[in-house]
Image (cartoon, rainbow, N blue to C red; front, top):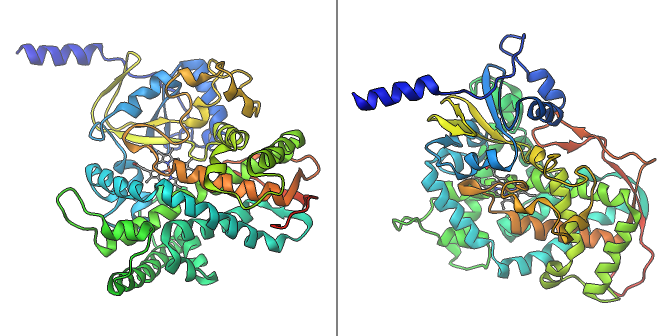
Length: 464
Ligand code: HEM
């Protein structure tokens, strides 16, 4: 009786988060949010505070804005705020069954641990050399000067670098135009349509995605089986996965390995290519910053700029801060999302089960109360204590807690090596002063019309 009374009291005193009303049935705020999600959330924060709910396409979203409110999501258990419920529909057709959000979270955590073992310093040392080599070869087609689509180029390059570093030499050697098209079709599965519409609809993009998934898996199976049969051991991620076992001693199946290889490639593909492209535009906009970054190349690597080494990549501190600041202003994952399975109390409000609970790095990274000159691209802000690092979740481009990214170190190595190489090759400039606007229609916010002007950097070296 006492317990029932307690529940009744909790129920009566429960306060739901403030709700933004809408006169449009079902769609709710989808149009305003889709047009400019950041502006929408910033206004919501100003008017309603750090916890706010609204409806879009028949679903209720509750955003936790600012570091304190975000703590709920990052510290939560998967049974309470669940990731599979919101992500699986999108990721399972792409990565396949048996991995990531298709399995209970404790299994995915074991899979993440296996992947992390393969992302170690010894591997990174090899990766730097491979990435520089791929970048130089790729950009030969750009010639001495011109105006080109930077985002497109970096997307193509990053498939090559990621495949070489994360899949191994056999799979990289099979990467021709046909396979690149398969990756593109598979990647076409990451759309708002795939997230919102029923999976059984006979849409051409769904069919292309499913066919590409099958064909890519078949390619990977052959490579996995050949490696197993040869008895040869390589020092790479594929070997790590072939050798890995779950806690109960079971090895990964070929299907799981193939799914994890797809996941590795695609998790890092858009995130790294958009970040690299935005970083290029921030550098192109600021000639003196670009010159400082080039001077840093010489100071750290030597006047005649020999091929860069892992240790030097680590020591390129200004380039590091440029990347950190790019990830602050343009974090590729705009929203992390979970499904509330149990009532969740935050800042005096109770979020009921069924709400999609969200944290937006983009909004946290530019919160007025937290960041000084919040919209300025200022890599040197991290030299001062006077930034928001005191607030635990004010800066979360790679997430936090049990779903935290395992690819951060690799992404830093990859993007810094690419830009280290590009800064040596070219000087960049905005085209007629145009700094790309943000394309909000894609799931990851890409630069709109991302054309950049470049010309060969005038310096001489035996290594160029
Ligand atoms: C600039 C590059 C990247 C950014 C900004 C980024 C960002 C993120 C974020 C925000 C999350 C958390 C998602 C959530 O909590 O819902 C995440 C998770 C993850 N990322 Fe990354 N990522 C990047 C690159 C990579 C790369 C290169 C890999 C693989 C090599 C990778 C693999 C993963 C995995 C496996 C997870 C775990 C998801 C989970 O446990 O639910 N990421 N990433």
